[in-house]
Amino acid sequence: MNAYKDFTARLKLLVSKQPNPITTTLSNIFTMRLIGNKTHGDLAEIAIPEFVNQYMYDFKSEHVGKKLYRSKSKEEDITIINELTKTEFPVSLKAYGAGPIQLSTDKENRMFPALEKHKTPIEGKCIGEVWNNPVFSNFKTINVLALIYNEKIMKCNILVFNNERAQAAVTTINSVVKGSGRKHPIYRFFDGDGGKVCEVRYGGSAANALQRGFWSDTKSSFKYFDSITDGWIDYSHNRILVQLFSHALITSADGHQSALEKIKEDIARLKEISGITK
Image 1: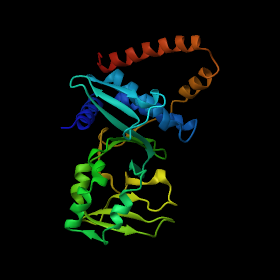
Image 2: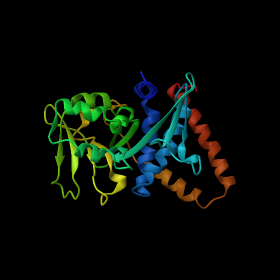
Image 3: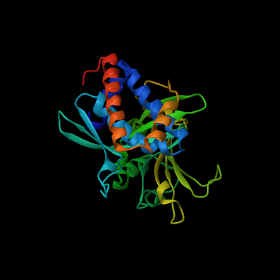
Image 4: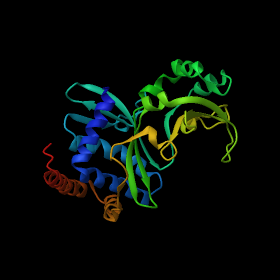
């Protein structure tokens, strides 16, 4: 088992035994959408490392953004360290609504041209040639932790893309040039039942570089994701947290220190209730 899979297995075990801490954390993260549509994603990058540091034995985590001016060598939002093995690995956090999700980027636009060299549909031994192309080597090391929400029903999920299951399932790759108001073509990967597994977006210099790369869909390709929370769980908005933020932004560091001490006391209380002694 690689380091990331070991971590997600341990996280799933923790959540199954003590669901309250992660439910509280996810509720607080998604409450940030009341402040701004993208605020929750940024704050998830500091909330999840703190969750790991507070609740997970043998692991510690750091928000990569804390390292000012650092150039990312891999797609990462947080770093996790297994304190027993001293193994360090990057994790990309995605806080998305249920539906399309970007798994990796392709800033250098290498994936799309590599697929264009094949006649479509790409099938049989050509599928193996695609996967063996170094351009697609990062597909095997996608460390995406997806925090997925559905605001209509107030439910959420933590999903991990199972790249091994997905790669083994692909039987056909097709070029898709029309549909859903699409401006640029994509290459879509299908399984033996004709179901969507993932896709590569987009080709050409006119395309949005931030959109390039591997995408999947937590609705139509749900079977290629594993759920850390063992399915959809309820979450709720914590409006007091919004008040806390608004007041904190107009108070001094002394006030923040006093509030932080109270918050630390509450974390200790929640750990005691959950039977977590770390």
